[in-house]
Length: 151
Image 1 (cartoon, rainbow, N blue to C red):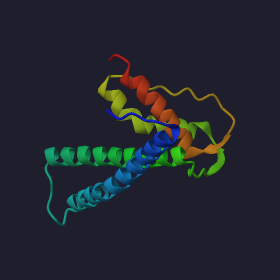
Image 2 (cartoon, rainbow, N blue to C red):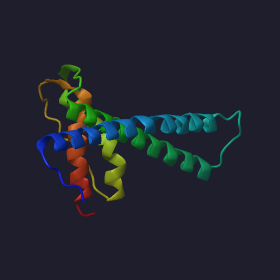
Image 3 (cartoon, rainbow, N blue to C red):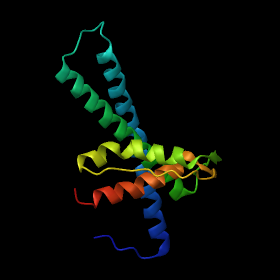
């Protein structure tokens, strides 16, 4: 068991954790990108044609690798938030773009639990925000809601 004797040790441990998360998420991006390139090669019919079952497997691997890439990006973003090094790219955004981003990120997860995500868009005014970071918050919020909801 680790016993922290003062606030400096706590801050050092917290910084070490943040750096570890940033390093791991950065290191995971390379093999995931390699998997995605391999999937593109499999899609090339000059290599050979796939049967329907193989196509479904490739599609599932593509979806999973995309999700892993997104998670590693979110971990990297989280480590930037914790260190105060996050850069926002703010612009005027239609809220529907944020909702669509979140919907597409969570569609598969919701379908697995037979949950229907319904978007009610009532001509909302544009908001000044960073699309990715704002959508990231919405995805995390809705992902938790889906995870803790019954089928």
